[in-house]
Image (cartoon, rainbow, N blue to C red; front, top):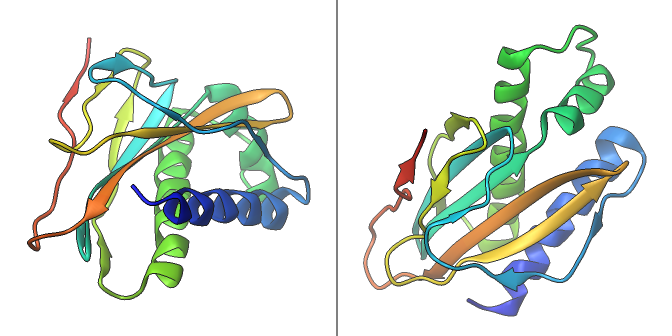
Length: 163
């Protein structure tokens, strides 16, 4: 995957947190994930990508992080439903903002929402998965990016396994 893709997604994350919270999120260096790793936190969403790129974008966050973000969005009684909806919205926002940089041929699916820490994420077949660790107010989340230039217009959602 091109380094510029990681930079685009990192900028989207920084912009999101600056806009919503007024406080920056911090990110450590991205690293290459391995197949079948248990990387999910409490709530996750995955978006399939097709068009000029193929693969998927997976975002996972802790309950505590989402519960701290919800009041900033006007939701003062956080619950599981709001947390899972927020993780989907965040994934969609990151991917949609990346689409602005990558062009209209960067097609994204509706987020697939997942709950629970025991999700095993498999990147799109034959595509490396890079992990961007994100911290905000001491709370962790991760963005997993598995994208490659497309040879054909096909969409990939990762296989996931739950408990």
